Length: 113
Length: 112
Image (tube, rainbow over all chains, first blue to last red):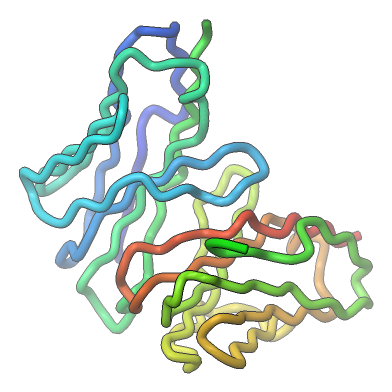
């Protein structure tokens, strides 16, 4: 069974204080790892898709990296508007559930001015 | 309208009511999904439709009944729900099953 664990559950940063969020996964063949941002009361907003170990993607202050066991979302010099819940999900090649994403429980990020 | 839209945004219903949630995607995608998001729990996949055909039913109780009349529209018919069904119901779509999924804003459902 696919498993996704995100840490920490919550992270409080000062504006400008860089940090990283972790997503550890166990899957039977990774087809893709996805990062989403979710604001309170809204649907998840797509950030990145990573497909193979060693791959990196960047968008503004965010950079996502992938190894064979985990992914990191690095946040450089965060601003208060980066405050949100960040979700990680995996799509695996196992079983008959093609297209099924398994989500982690999310990391709640709060950036104080 | 652009992206994925959902109506209504908020819904309060009694346990004996029947209601429907609507999702529409304006992205030209062929796969659509229903998810349930409860407090303190990861998103749970409920149903997957690919080219209007249901390809996944993640052991969802029969009081939830999906309908996909075409690749752009997805409905979730609700009847005799329980208070524990209160949650944020999210719709998503992707170009094909397995591609990156794009989510709508969700319907906040409260069952009294």
